[in-house]
Length: 373
Image (cartoon, rainbow, N blue to C red; front, side, top):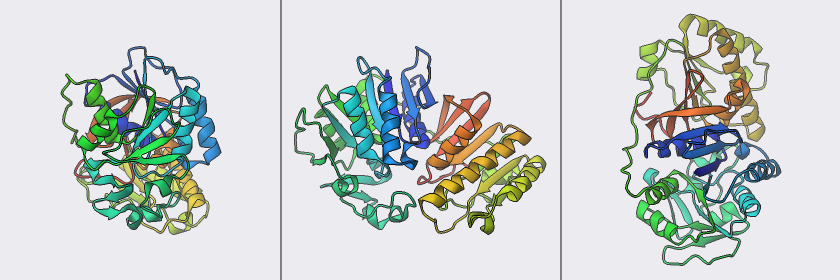
């Protein structure tokens, strides 16, 4: 079995989507849970990116203590631009499960995200000069991966062998899929794999050389009689003119300025419930505003979780679409949903999964909708 520990739920879903392309039996759970013995890939989602470092280490260590290293492949999914407590979480798994070193490739060359000579670029621009510089919880203030990560980290160049039994985390240069493959070949038998979806896909290709992976999906998200769309980022695009919204008559509700600013949300939530009962399809958005820092981000995703809970009491949706990993985790945790059967990959990183008759579609906040919505 391949066991993946992901620091947010959209990253977990992205990994699960990559496994679906190989026809593998995939389960996604919120934290540790019982899964069928026939599972090929088990993806465990946490919300450790949005909390403190000590809580992240405690959560990941607790999960790692219950995992069996023998006969299994362990993969630590990280944010593609290294937001979160990457070194602390990778280090915790290494310590608990006894890995000698870790190979970290967070970059996704398929999305223009590369590391060259220890410098992180997105479509040719140093990462600290992109909108990630303004991330409310983990602003990226340097393009040097060693400086972003700090701690027990060294850059692994393409032409450099990996030292063995060092206890270190090697973040590897790679600017294309073949570079990732070259770096993977350097890993020893006691190496923890960590990083992004492109690295995971290369790992799958190595493990299943006789299997031809399906092309990445491009499956439109189809409206259902009762649908809820949550745009949980201040960077979200207006979806009111999307084919999905036009076809379903989706009512779009943007968080009022006073609620965004800190006023109680009860009145707004009541109005959302009334509109949902009438229109049956509703999109709830934070709206394009300047973020207010970590505390504001936590409060806003709590309001969005409250909103979905209130709407679900009116009528459980047949389709729930959520943009943003921390927002998705907050909503699913509030609903009390723990395990999901993977259904399809709508687009790279945008995955549909099913819980008790409701399809839940998750999209990372930094990925575009493309033409699937």
